[in-house]
Image 1 (cartoon, helix red, strand yellow):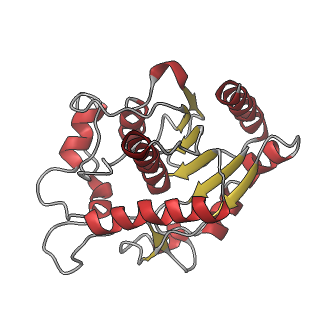
Image 2 (tube, rainbow, N blue to C red; image 1 turned 90 degrees about the vertical axis):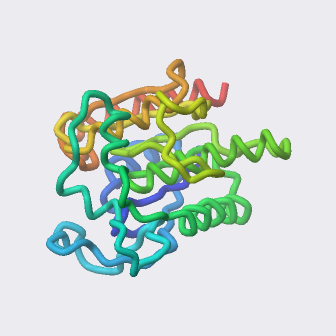
Length: 250
């Protein structure tokens, strides 16, 4: 299976390939998958105090505020004070309450950017995203579904793999899709890799809740907002992905 791979905010294709290397090597070793890593289209500057965390430039992101001079807040600047509410959906609503900057332009551009890559370099049967990349991957899956409903053009993607993701945005309204207020659902096979110690794990669970439950796997590597690298964990995760691919393509 050929996967399109989307890095997190303030990352790059090269950095993501290094971060994901144990997972990639596990699935390349027996010919299960191939991988195409792409940069996000927007150049970015990490939040103050996070420069060391994201390493050396270049930095990219998929989604950015429409008006960089606006008094409204870039949602990524709120992660220092991530809320804790009764449900994952309540947590995300609290995070995105009034004052969050609109990101319609870059979200629309990101969707079209991925459609263009799929048209030029596809077909891709799978998509992988980490953090912001997972949100964009999920948004793209909804966009493929909507395009199919509107034009009859069949989606390329059969599997989605989300590392530490947040819920998708509606590709028409650009509002966050939450399972307790929207009927939109990702209807392909998905695997959600979460860390129980991730301070943003509510976002991952809110994403999981937007996916068809009968074909959604969940895998907890037991750590934080990171990508798993331990040999035993990677082997176990690799077997889950192989099973998912078999089910999705049979």
